[in-house]
Amino acid sequence: MSALLDVMLAGGPIVMILALLSLVSLTVIAAKLLQLSGALSGESDRERALHLWSEGDRTAALAAMEQGRTAVDRLLRQAMTGLRSGLPRAVLDDDLEWRGNAEIAVLNRNIRFLELTAMVSPLMGLLGTVLGMIQAFRELALAEGAANASLLAAGIWQALLTTAVGLVVAIPAAIAATLLAARVETVAQRIEATVGRLFAIEDRLD
Figure (tube, rainbow, N blue to C red):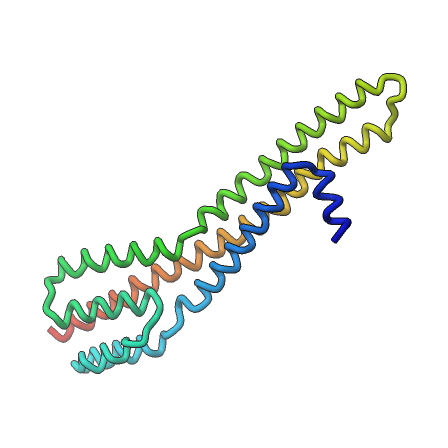
């Protein structure tokens, strides 16, 4: 732990900022994984509800979806409720689109932060390297006759440290943002497919 602290102190304030950014991004990643881990659960209940709806038992179909907690469940339940109450299809479509966009916005929350972290961290690291190199050559110039290779090397490794830290912060954030965004897209597609199946069943019943 002390070695890690020494490295952070050697890198200066930019490394400190990057370390804080890393802590926040890891917290966001953990929270999003927890949120999205069960986003597609309850498939068997949805299948049962659609089967009951196809048999004309709308009350039982809605009851089967009563305990649903995912975005897919909520959209399917809203679609069933709208159809059961005789809501015009155009109005129901608008309501579902609004609700669907709201659900996806919640799932997408903080993914943009991870994308921003992945973009900014390497730039901050590069900035730290440039500033460190400037400082190293300045100290070398001030040293005059006492200057030697070890003095320059010490300044350069400290300068390059910030670039390395920036990449260490950026890479996990970039990977997580891509995978989480793909998961949200899968949820959106599942919502569309599930509600589409309900409408297809309803059209056949009519």
